[in-house]
Image 1: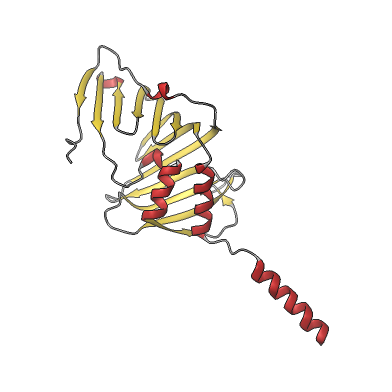
Image 2: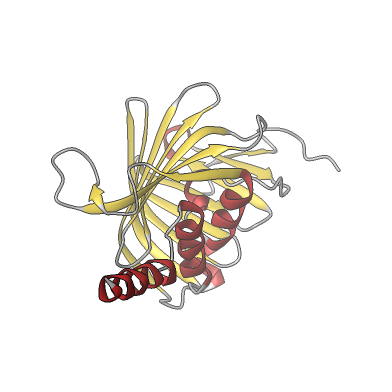
Length: 223
């Protein structure tokens, strides 16, 4: 009986010594992974309703972001941390908007160290099924760890976000969001290349001379 008591004690000690993987801790590890990334480039697919867009996304810390679309062809979105620029070739229009930091992560910017910091601050994470990798979607051979994030306050733009993470690289593979008006948006990232030495010049965009310019098209930035 003494032997079994010793064995039980040793097993119990080992279980206590093992780190419990919580959703909060896992999301923190993903955030730490992105904290070591200076820049990245990836293929991106954006789905919203019946619309599907494809392109290449580039990111440079702290908040430079650019998406060059192949579908719609030649459409461009650029953010340099202060100004958002959107070129819409279909309308020969360039939209410029000065943007103040509002402490929210949105869209493709969630897949950055800054975006993940905001997600951890503004959302509560839980595992969808647990820390064990599961199929990205029904019938998929690709396996990911899924986190469900629910907003801490009603002011957040997404009611719920599901983040799918590659368990080996700890890079985000997919972000699915449900907006406050119940609209579904999905961002897929693939062929991610990190720390390639992307220069700041990539985030300087000169729109075609023929494009009509529209400044502060969303709202006028006020102090």
